[in-house]
Image 1 (cartoon, rainbow, N blue to C red):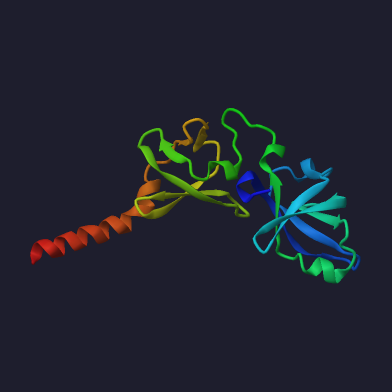
Image 2: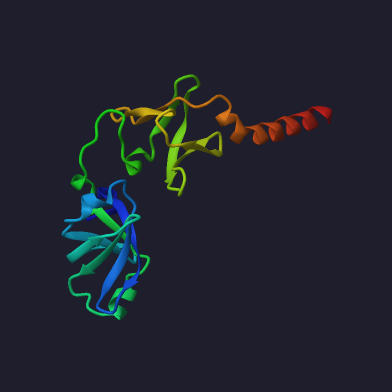
Length: 191
């Protein structure tokens, strides 16, 4: 299995008990959807290694206690701390309409209803209070809050993310760079 065929499900945060169980963080909207997961790929030294799950217990706050087959001691479990977890993309339900998975929009072009084509989605920041889409625009990172008022949907065939940004959002990120460029132009004209 290759990374580009998978999505990151979460990561292993710590050991749990002394019999090889680990605590994992599930970076998903609905952790309970994964309560019958039978296996997962663990990234170790850049390689995706399949691990079979003996049992999984979903906890509050996107956490789960997992016991992997053949991991029977705290020493074995400790070696897995901070390892990312992956699942094949084909295990995801297909979304339609305005819904999308965060990993699928990386590389999509952002198109604003007023400003038109802006830039390319580079990453998604999952924050405690608000998830943010990072877009590369004129050499600057512009952060777009993920909410229904701004995100209108995706066009998968055209690889675009359609948005309606509030007036001035892009300028907040580019204002200083334009001022620097204008100052440099003024200095050149004075010489």
